[in-house]
Length: 457
Image (cartoon, rainbow, N blue to C red):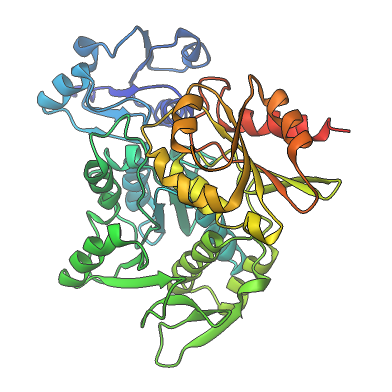
């Protein structure tokens, strides 16, 4: 007598969880789907074999009957209910792990490229995807960015390029990327992790299953990643370092105004840094990382250069919105942590040179160290307009720096910035915070900024 396979539990029904339920139901799996918000269950209720559950916390009893649990990144493994399920020995993975297993079983010749880091993940993921596509490689791009992992599966895909957050990396088991990229590590999500070391350990899981023959692209300029490089070298893994500060033999780096491919016996100049389509030294680092990963995946230098010169940048990431009366307005709403805002500020000239930034910052604190903004703000920021729950904490951190102002809404902040800015300066929305105190998400925040800027007269 054949016994049915146990159901798969899907915990959290955001983008990734809902896509996972649809993927599993389409393949005849029984699914127990839970979310705290009952409205997320309605679109899934008519799928065959799906048992929808709602409640304040994941229900241990029905979920404990599942053979595997797919955990959405927004649901912490540290919840008491999750601890009980994990202690019961039920495998707790995520949609990325499930996609990986499905691809390996159905099309083992397909490869994975995975990108993590505190900042720059979305830009680098997008650049690598474009480079592979420019080379004619059938490529799917998603994960933490854009399409959820289990929406990407197609039998004809040759390469999966996945942005992976620390939350996603917590719940991988056998996932392995032939090319794994770690961009940087700066304090972030310290409302979920006890310290930077714990956050970094989650990020470093991107290399957990790497083996000789794989390529690990790692930022040689980030002291927090030195241990990753040493560990990879000791394991005989192939590291391709990247740098914008120095020559790194065997890597991709910026030197004397050029981006250089130094992987071979003779360094190969790729393109002048000034011709990269996206501005800022952080984007030079993103370009170097993207080039390293793409070149290691068989993309030609010509395809790499073409994409780097033509890519205009992501929406909400140092996005030029408008120039009005000599002042350019930039939407950097995706700057949701201190490190991202620091990188963006460093792209602008000093106040002393006649430039200067009118910075709009604030939101929900992710326990970042706002004091780290002070030295750059003193040099680059002329006026700071503070919004949201973290306004007082930001004001304390920026004392003895720029002139400080408060605004109650995005419209008020933009109108005040218009009054304060002088020709030659820039208005920059780069919040260094999460958006959920005032907005639906960082996209909503950026859209409201953009709309307010376009309404200026």
